[in-house]
Length: 163
Image: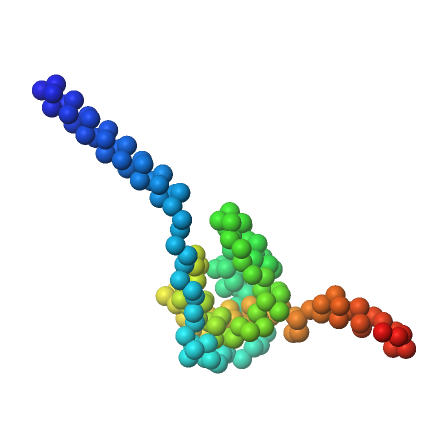
């Protein structure tokens, strides 16, 4: 009886050691890079059927505050509490230049399907709600990208000054 108990103890101990070694080697092994995220062309070209209005933006803000703020931040700066805790590097929705090539269809697709650690909302929010979120996110950035320091310096130079 002692032999059987001892053999079982040795077997269980060996399995635990092998498991621990596999766990340690998994952490040190290089992680495969995630597949490139690509939005289908038809989805990217999809027009926003919801007109930008005060009501749409207000509805989008309400949804943003309850669904997105924890990661994307109160003002859309990408520095929400959860993103900070998870060490995520999210883009700033207030930076028009960062999203100059992003279509409304692109935003809608990511909101619907998710991206990386972000879950999709297509099973929780209806289409109009998701388009309202797009309209709200668009409202966070100024209408034109901020000028570069060089462009600002040119504008500040007197008209009759020599180059």
